[in-house]
Length: 448
Image 1 (cartoon, one colour):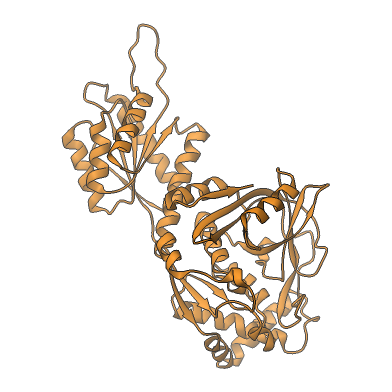
Image 2 (cartoon, one colour):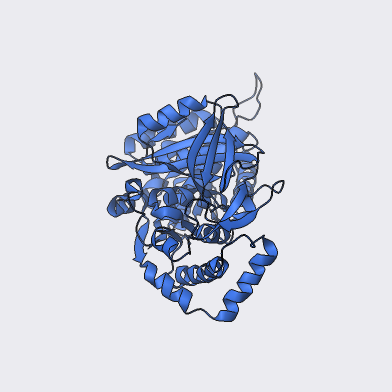
């Protein structure tokens, strides 16, 4: 799934400036990058970029290691030539990071002049048409550190999506026009590759499974959840489908998937809500109701956090408490449920033709989002909030999220923009990182 981000790191300075500060920042900022991006490859230049020759050496090292993005930290003032040469030769975007000035006094000299240098270099790169990002502030300043982290996470997501295979298990449910998609637009915008496997393949795999395997899984579910309220045969179908989907996803080499979960699956009493929740906790993310755009959103959130998401409907608001209720049939990952309330495996709450989890999801910071193809162009709908501790008040799975903006205004904006009904929730504040992803992909953001 995806590939590691290759980050090139170099500290630069002009020859007439003191070298000691550059050496210190080379150690400290290089270590900071490695500590904060253990999942990436940090390629540290073997030299300080203090001359045309050493900058050339750094560029050769980066190019040889297929660097995806360069982090250039100012040890001291640097002319426009270093950043320009690096971007031209390596053909990679660059983050120009200017730490705060070393304290100086009236009779003392400037030791870095990094801010002036960074703004000068950014202006030059804009003229050259290079992709660059300016950051001002030392690594100890969370504003600067967060910007660098979010930029690099965004580049990681963009790279990972370009190496992602999305599998379609069926198309979309009847009359759900918003779950249709434009495969070519997705490939152009995100780089995601899409292939299809017919539901019959899944059904045939369910029939061909070893009896001992699905009976063992049934016993596991009976021990973990109260399954006595399930109709006869539903738990068997659940275990068969769970094992079949794991096999099909692995064999087809799908990194993510979507599934047409009704009406055919319901007709066979195999509606997959609880199965999808279980798989999400194992890193196998399959979006329900064939909604590819919602799954693209979950994909980005998963690449940012490594945590399961929750594809959900927005069903209700409470203006007095300023809460939005997100609900779905029963596809929440068990790890997302609040331990304060009972989790049950029950029949599908609407159609009654499969297995679903019933319960309330846990409290904490959440980011609700959705990529939407609106008139041939993608937009991102983005909402931050706080999931509150509250038991479910209807069958299925729900999260009640408190937001800052008046909830009626949120609904009015959704209607105004034409945002479809499915959202992906993740239990982490990744709004800024999502916005950086959109900047890299030239996707407008609708934030409410």
